[in-house]
Amino acid sequence: MLSVIRVHLPSEVPIVGCELTPYVLLRRPDNTATTDDVPESSPLDGHFLKYRWYRVQSDKKVAICSVHPSKEATLQCLGCIKTKVPVTKSYHCSTKCFTDAWQHHRVLHERAAAEGNGEEEELLRLNSSGSVSSILSTVSSLTNGSSSSVYPSQKTGAGGETLVEVGRSKTYTPMADDVGHVLKFECVVVNAETKQNVGHSCTILTSPVDSNGRPMSMGSFTLLSYNILADAYASSEIYSYCPTWALSWTYRRQNLLREIVKYHADIVCLQEVQNDHFDEFFAPELDKHGYQAIFKRKTNEVFVGNTSTIDGCATFYRRDRFSHVKNTRYVLVEFNKAAQSLTEALIPVPQKKIALNRLVKDNVALIVVLEAKFGNQAADIPGKRQLLCVANTHVNISHELKDVKLWQVRSHIIEGTGKIAASADIPMLVCGDFNTVPASAPHSLLALGKVDPMHPDLMVDPLGILRPHTKLTHQLPLVSAYSSFARMGGSLTAEQQRRRMDPASNEPLFTNCTRDFIGTLDYIFYTADTLTVESLLELLDEESLRKDTALPSPEWSSDHIALLAEFRCMPKTRR
Image 1 (cartoon, rainbow, N blue to C red):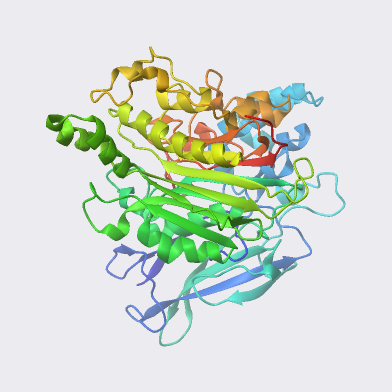
Image 2 (image 1 turned 60 degrees about the horizontal axis):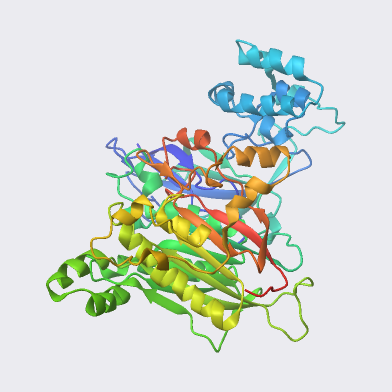
């Protein structure tokens, strides 16, 4: 008989306007598993699936498990209460959940002790206890010093909550009325003839719905850079540790969209966006959230396969925050055209074929000039427009082609933005997946404005395209946005983030985390004479990611992490 094995939601936080598509794994009558839908119009062996979506409205507040956000909490850590750890971190859905998370959870206690809240001795006793049961309590027995309960009611139908039905299909798009409420998804097998439910229904709870609105200080703006992992590269052979269902594009696209929209960035720079996915999914879906889109796909000289799956760079900007400058064209940088020009001009005839094979790699960059629609009192000059140049790129991945990486960065990204900077004298942002680690020659050129002539990367230059080395410089005052963590104050959050930074380079310890590699490849650079960093998206820690082996995972749908920075324009100084 048809039965439901498991139900899962790809994102912990529903966003208004972003469709929710649950993952439902079924067991067919022949005992095989499938994720195919079984609607009433096409029953399987006399059975079909019935779906319901409810908005949970209750006078009693519902607590959500801090580890499994799709489940209600049934237990709370007493150690968190005693040491004043944020209450949302204290909830767990089961004893096993708490036990499995203990090594990570106890760090919260240790950090609370470091803050000196007067509970150190008790905290150390709790942390050294051989049994976690001594610091657990059922949520219904705790009051936390409040006259009204802040713990979940039992979902018996008579626990005080009201379930308002909002949908009867497998998917649901949260509306404004859902903001602040938990949603409940219900799935049950139904007998096609009797219309009676068969067995127990499978249910799942979301976190409260987000309004898709972020408070922003006057005159600031945010930029997100994210390599989303093209479906063409997301193979089970490469990412065998990721469940097949979590690697499928139908699952990942909704999870990625929800993550991107959740950040509420004013400018979104994506890499590895497939041509067909841009046209059919990202452009129309992000348009619903107020974004205008520009896309540049890779060229196809070295591509084998369906050209619709060629990936590229996509830049989106909020129409209510920015407009594209009409009298400027966005610059579509095709590295291959420059490779062909370079080969024709400098490479001797006998080496031309070898040179083209080395230089032609299909990589692209997208450079766009935007005009801000918001004011900035610190930088405003009456009648003066606030322009911004944004470069979005994806540099070649090959570790052996160090000369090609550096040539791409110098000849196209820096020279392309440099020409605009020289002609317009406007703030610059250069971001993307540079496929180069901190302290490499491309990173040094970007972050320091020069490359040491003795840098080991310069030893790889069979075509002589990097000579003379004295020209490997630029005058743009570029600074990595995430290096700001090193200059932050002494708060607990700042200290936590500094532990996720490499002190030698002031870059994140990683932005790419797979089973075989972990390191930093992605950056956001800005011109420090015209922009200042206001805030940054917190970095993820490796320990939390390794619980699923690596990226991508059911929780995070790319092998890269997203980087986001909030900037403010400053009064211009002469360059």
